[in-house]
Image (cartoon, rainbow, N blue to C red; front, top):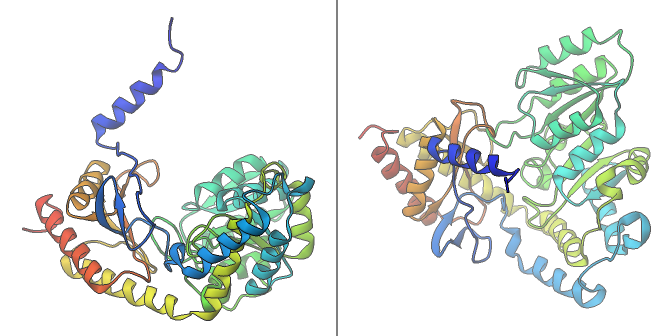
Length: 395
């Protein structure tokens, strides 16, 4: 009998021939600054655990207490019987933290982006989107069936020209951008984008997944960093990165949140977060308010590690944040560098096409507040050795 899925084997074989295939590394310990993957203890530079909150004692205890009080799961979607007091408390806490009227929590950041864009827009509408926006934004745009207009990365003038050209078109207009771009680590020109959106009556939306817990006062994100409170209509954030747990959220007006409660399909058709997750997220916001030194440590480590890479001769692209790519060009070389680093006790992931454009492959690194200088020095030495062995650096 013919296997109708046999084409998959051919595609996998092609990836392997191109050197673009890499195994799933299996975490066998806590997600920490130094972790155990595939039986090997490594300095972990591949995690989004910016502030080290995955192992914070307060988050652990909050999760344990919630399980004891509420059980392991919620038992339903939010709109039937799965809205628990913990969920409402978390949404109110995030709204106050972000200085907005209301908030809705989604099961993931991907669901928050895709569910929001596809809920508020339709085929008669227009989306003006940065060409390097996250896949969840791209998928949300496609699901909405609105007309999609991409502008060159961070080009405010180009975004303005597109909106000007759409002045006579019907439908709503949405201008959307990542706050921090996940592959390059650069920051969106949000003040300029907001001005353009206001000038043309467009909805302004920012995905602050990699800015949450990293930028702004106590990690409030790019809107706070640039003093744009009240001028960004839709803010998306994550609970899966600096917050250290799981989920995404959307902040904005009360009307926006009430609408999403009833029209965002990922919210409507996914079982709500388990009590332990919601409780741990609540504890994380307590930590953000009470321990700002974690963010200070994150940035100190970022500056130290980034400078070490530059001093060694590596190209770190346009990074302005703890996301620091080591640019190498071809996917095969990126994966070879990643493997060499792992053999020397460092986990940093190779990334190539289609995640990034062809010729733009890199090894992406992210430091955490909890990395020690000794760990970062070990990682830098591993990069120097592997870089010289692979011909990325001069011998």
